[in-house]
Image 1 (cartoon, one colour):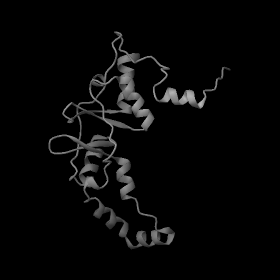
Image 2: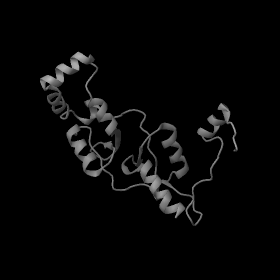
Image 3: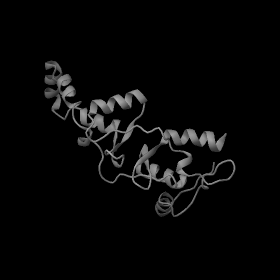
Image 4: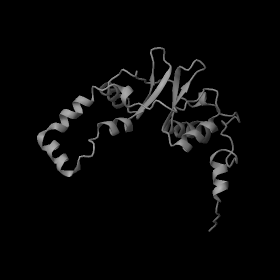
Length: 181
């Protein structure tokens, strides 16, 4: 059995792109892959004023885990995911006795219904939103997804409008279709 140890400095250099361990992904024809080759162009978005109920309808109907939040001109202003919704809807820590009271009194359902009318701007991620351009190299995008543990990245054009999205699942599917098979 072969075993080697990577030092913490080498791991840091590998993780942040100072060392290239893998070749740049290319198509079968040897062309360097760009974000435009992998992005999904049928993008579902919400506005900051959309309700959580409207967001859940989009997520559930389309079997997706998150969407970009855009202004009236289609500019990216945030991201919102199913995880953001779950964190918002989950009861705050009340202790065991408080939780029993809410469940027995039937207030949990009422609280959830009230929270569904909250606007997306209250729960969306607003700061440090990473996005990529259709012209960015695929390798850099894979690194962003893995370093930051993101599931999705919005693709924006030069004007800052959302024109696509990349998800980890879509990337794996496209690697299989465009590179492996």
